[in-house]
Image (spheres, rainbow over the protein chains, first blue to last red):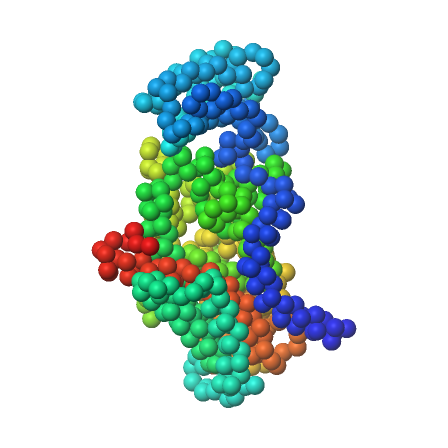
Length: 152
Length: 394
């Protein structure tokens, strides 16, 4: 029994080097395998959540993310919905004005107007769960807005 | 395989003969050559070629000396310290080139462009178990230091080295280790043993807070290394307080206390990742063995341990505390050969076998990770000398 234990211990110690090598050489494959098997994703709080609808306009497109009310054990009382505007040809029109139905129930939830030169945002809540917008994030070719929501 | 060495203080009694050393070093030379060149022809530009050759020679020289001398820490430590310095020298200019600032803005967060760091791992476990999401603004698979890549690396290295992670792989550990080596005789010699439990308390608090708020609390509020890598852009009172905390902890735990105590105070007295990693020592094949028959209880190893993982009880028990980071310093300082690297489940009496079998995978990870950091750090220094700027170049 002692000998078997010793052989296993030495074998495991010797295998350490090939294991390390295999890890580094196949890193992209192992990383993909880990992510696929566990189904792990970046938390919506950081990623904005899944895009559930894309609306194409002339010159830009609007992407509506799934509303997020993430909590550890279940949905929270408050959350947000993220809307992205992506310029197709590098620049936005001077004003973006849009009616958003984020929960896709056929009723407009809020209207938003963005002055793209100054990044000024005007939000008008048309449905009670809408609380307020967070500061607009502006990156090349993209405007990102999160609107805080109450969980209905 | 072994020959008798000098028995002066700090010199283990056995070392490996030259022919065995060379034979054992050949695979490491080839592997480091392969990983450092990434299979590409040598660069023609001198600014790229010099760092590559210097870091390659340095790494392999350290490894050969480690094998030959029978010592571990003496030749691990310079690599580990330069690895951490290389990271800082590489990371900051790289961020300046890529995004124009080292500060993380909301733009990087929403785009998932923040490199994942192993310090986050303990905080991600509970949220991942309940929500199947990772509470970090990075990318699962794309870009530099993706979440998937770092998780795989951590999993495998934890299985292979346990908390050896903290002395061979962690790209921050070399900073407080470097400062802890500045004074030959520390000014503060007595550290309360109770402080050894602080990292576990920090771990518990940040894990719970991160689970409640679904945000990496330690990274947001307590990580000293934000000071030398990246931090949230100071835009309001909250981010200003966070930045002040980062700098204060860095100055206190990574610079001043290591200098005064000669210990790795951030790693041994604060780091929650270190505490978390201690548990992996329980399922790991490599460990430190203290031969009670050879030990004369001189306490040299206790004094030398940088993470306070040894005390009198350990000498009686024959093994260090679970917080041991396998740096090998205790092995180096024991002049009686009572402390050795062991493979659990094997009989005593083969100190060099255990040492070589541990050092090989440990040095390999450090060489793969650290080699490129040292190389890039050297490149930035050459760039600074030749162009007057850390950014730009090829």
